[in-house]
Every structure is written in C-alpha cells, then in structure tokens.
Length: 238
Length: 397
Image (cartoon, rainbow over all chains, first blue to last red; front, side):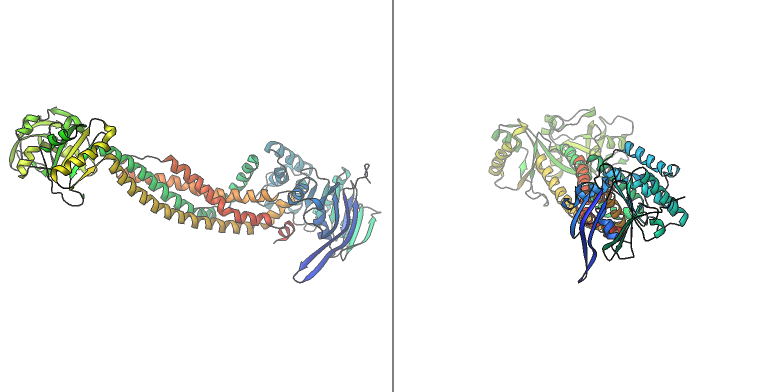
C-alpha cells in the first residue's frame, strides 16, 4: 500500500462482451480490482480466461461493456477517444510479448515515439530517450534497428519506451513469452528493479515461475477473479 | 501543430524512401499531369510574348492599325484602294496623323552574275521609315518626289547586300529586279525574322514603282497612324464609314495589335483548355493511384498503427501521418513535373529560337494543385487508418 492510499487502478464490476457472429462471448463477467501505487501484480489464468481483455481495458485500449474503470483517479469511462489516447500516452506504458517496435525506426527513435505524441521537442526528446536506453543498459545500441537487436534487447527497448512519459502504470503482456530463459530472467530482473524504484507493474503471464517474481498474483478463470493473494516466497531474479 | 507536421514529414519521407520504386511509380500520374500543363503554359506564355514583340514589326504596333483589302484573310484580295485614297482618308478623318501604304510582292535581285533567291519586295510610301521604325546603315530612303516620279530606286536588306556585294558598298550600284534596272540607294539595319519573314532579305521600293511593274494602280494595305494612339477604336470607326462610302463595299478588314493578340490568345486558351483537360484526367488517375497505394500502405502498417495508438497517438496524429505521406508523394510528383515541364519548354523554345518565359503563377498553381491532389485522395486511407481499433490492430498479423 502506498502512502497516500490512492489506488492506481480501481475497477468495479467490469464486464466485457464481444459479439462473434451471432454469439455473445463474455470475456469478463464482473471484475473488481484495486491496485495500489508501487504494487507488482501478476495476472494469471488459462488461455481465454480474459486476462488479455482485462489488460486492454486497464491500458485504455478497450472500453468495458459495463462497470467503472478508474485509473490514477481519472474516470476512464467518461473520456473520449482523444482523452484515452492521452491517458495511454502519459499514464500507461505497454510492454508486449512480440515487443512491437517499429522496424524502420532505430532503438532511440522507438523510445522517442511516446514523447513525439506528447509534443516534446527534438533535443529534449533525444536526451530523455537516450537516458532511458542507458537505464536499461542499451546506450551503445541506441542507433540499431530492431532487426539488429536480440529478443532480450528488443524487449528492453520496449520497456524504455513504456517508461518514456513517466507513466503511473506499466502493463506487460507475456513479456517473456518470446524470450529464452536467460533473457526472460533479465527482463524480470529489470521489472523488479523498476518496481523497487516505485513503479507500479502489472504483468500478464501463464508462467507460475515468472509470476512468483511479483508481489501479488491475481488468477482469472472464465472472466472472473478466482484468487487474489500475495506472493509469500517471492523469487529474486538473478 | 506546425511542429508535429514537421515530425510527420520526416517520418513520411522515410516511409517513401523505404519504398523508392513504389513511391516513384505512384507519383507518375501526377508527374505527367503537371509536366504537360507546365510545358504548355510556359510555351504559351513565351508565344504570347513573341507574338506581341513581332506584331510591331509587322506594322500593327500599339500606335497604329492596318486597313487591308479583302474581308476574309483566307481569300486572295481584290483591292480597290488607290494611291489617292491616302489624301481622301486624311481629308475625311482629321484625327489621322499619317498613312503608310504597303504593297507586297516578290522577286529576284540580280547584280552582275549574282542573284538572290526570291526576296520579299515591298512597295511603300516615303514616310515608311519614319513611321514603321527601323534605320538605315547606309545611304538614304526614297523621297516623296521619287514615289510620285515612279523612280526605280531600292533599299535592300543587309543579307541581300552581303550576298550580292560582299564587303563593298552597294549604294549607287545598279541591280536588276524582274528585268528592270534599279538604283540601290540604301541598306536597312539587321532586324532578324518576323515569323517566316526574314526582314534582312527584304527589298523596299516606291509603291508606285511596284504598281507600274505589276500593271496595277491598286494598293493592298494601309497602316493608319491616329494622332492619339489611345483613340484607335474611334478612328477605326470613322475610317470604316469613309472607306465604305469611297469603295461602295465592305470588302476590307482591320488588323490591330489587340485584334491579333486576341486571336493568338484564343488559340492558346483553347489549347491550354484542352491540355488542362488531359492533365486533369491524368491528375485524377494519379490521385486514385495514390489513394490505392495509401490503402495498401495502411494495410501493411496495421500493426504499426496499433503500436502508435498504444503509445498515445490520437486519431488526428494517425490522420496527419498518412495525409502528410500522400501529400508528399503527390507534391514530389508535382515538383518533378514542374522541373521536367520547364525543361521541356526550354528545349522546345531552344529549338524554335524563342525566349523562355517562366509563368510563375502556373508554377505556384501546379505546386498547390499537386499538394491538394495528395491531400484529397489521401483523406480516405488516412481516415481508415485512424479508425482502426487499437486492440484489433495490435493483434493483426
């Protein structure tokens, strides 16, 4: 629990229904979740349990069919598309399984992307992006294209990008899913370091071992939370 | 806003450069459209200047107009004007300052064993030199007395002088024209060509003398100089009345600088309209090509759009990104078309020995139009990109 007691995420009775042809698919069927500043939460569950949908809603990429979403004291339901874009830009950082770096841009330009949309001028932007790359240990790879980077390096560039605008929350969707165990371990260690600096993290994973590096595990099944408990013997990434 | 456009331009440039062949092919429609318009407009502008310059040499300058025999310029005239009409017209229309009479003809000039090719032989009055411009480099012009006396004197162009006499002085030499002996009394200064007529190969003789030679007393055309050049229209009307009364016919016509310019302008306008139509079709096709390629680009970059949205791009950022890209394709095509068009016009002007006059209004308009084509045809693909659902876009393989 953070000192000020104001949660980063507070969602109440969130439902999300998709229409697939003539069938309604209930991806989320009433989720309540409160995440405090400085937490490190894993969301786990089998395929199709709704964890990706939950992450998209937490990241303001998608809207719930019903229920309330409060992100950093902002009622997200009331925002229009442009305001949602601004939330994604300023308050949320995404880390994807497939990295999702733009292949034509080099590492530092990829990190600059959120800063461009935040309207930051070139010099300031470049300085900030370079600093972020340095903090993830990739300073000397600044001008490399994603095709010239390893999977682990790419994911670190993506993490630097997610940090660009100083977000309240980092959302990582299977961040180690495409990495070998060594690189995966590095990424988890980086996450733990970031969390130690006070950054709130939510990772979606189906890997119990990865989840045990976080502080709290939320388990989903069929669109509902079935378990929500702290990690007692937390692993330390070596 | 300005700043983000600059950012988008840099990104668009990279997107275009990463697909050079495709970008170039996409531009082609715009290049061809703009090229054809610029070439034509530049040539037309040059032609207008050329014609204006030359009309003065033809004798219908800004301070005079031509009264010519024959209503229809396509039909060989049967002139009814005579020498005495000069005095008649001056008497009837006091606003006339002076009148030069002109009769065209042709013939070979012979000196000893040398002979020219067929030269333009012009019969005229003694006031020709003073009113129609030009100077003599040697000798003198003929006098009114020589016109009245039907004297066989001639003034020759510098090319004839050189061809027949080389470096020696032609003045006071005797030459033959159509079997008659003439005395060379002067040489005109070099003036170059007016359309197909080489003024430097011209022979000028008294109008009465050429009438004698051709066995006629008729005159083909008068150049009428009003006292006030601003009142050409008024003088023309009075002359019309006087001439109708005199020859009891309306078998005559006027040529004014404005009239000739109007004809030239009409022809050029028709041609410009025609080519503009073709260019418009070319731009339309080019624009559709751009739209097509932009739709392909959007489809190729669905995932990129998803990522951009995830990191905070608003709809208008995505719209701007694709609009700037399509505008850039079209604008680059336009600029290329302008350069090629000016080059084409320059080459054509070079071969017909005209001067290149760049129509800056056309250059500016071509730039604006090509940018507008890119924006117009880029709107639909850009909106499609902006409307993509970020979640679906991120999942897109």
